[in-house]
Amino acid sequence: MASFQKSIAEYKKQLEKGAIQEAYRGLMEYMMGLKTHFMKKYPDYVESGSLYYGYMDMTYFSIFPKSIKDRKLKIPIVFLHEEFRFEVWLSGVNRRVQDEYWKLIKDSKWNKYKLVSQEGPLVDSILEHIVVDNPDFSDLDGLTRQIEKGTLKFIQDVENFLSTH
Image 1 (spheres, rainbow, N blue to C red):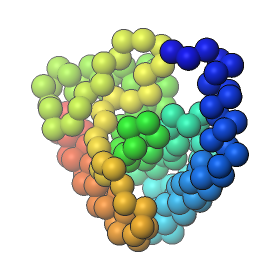
Image 2 (cartoon, rainbow, N blue to C red):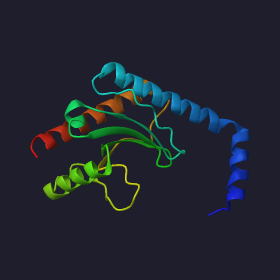
Image 3 (spheres, rainbow, N blue to C red):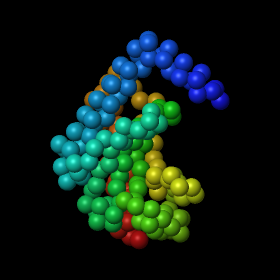
Image 4 (cartoon, rainbow, N blue to C red):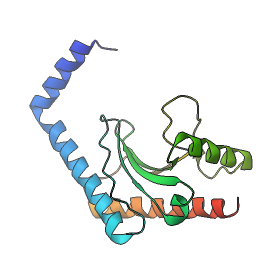
């Protein structure tokens, strides 16, 4: 791993080119637009939370379908910067809730989606699912449709599981 000073020098060099700022600004504007899309189309799902911008590792916002929210769960829609993909997650509102539902899913042997190990202090999800890998940002409407379709399917599958367990 490069020293901090070498990393900063490279960071400065890349910033001088200007592409990183333009791409990051565009990505954040897209994520805000995606959140707005969900707010308008699914007003019962979105609360007035803010977009989490992250540290160029992940950017996300959460939606709260009633059946999920009533169980103290949420559905983050996440862009992972390094992996360069959109995922949808099932998360608890706190660690206790997260551990409870993780155990329920593990014990049921339901394996439709990736069950995330709960080892370590910074586990943000119970289930994760890739909805768009290597997204095409030249067609933002098409990208939004892909994310929406994958997210709604994930929510439906989670709701179906929870209704029987």
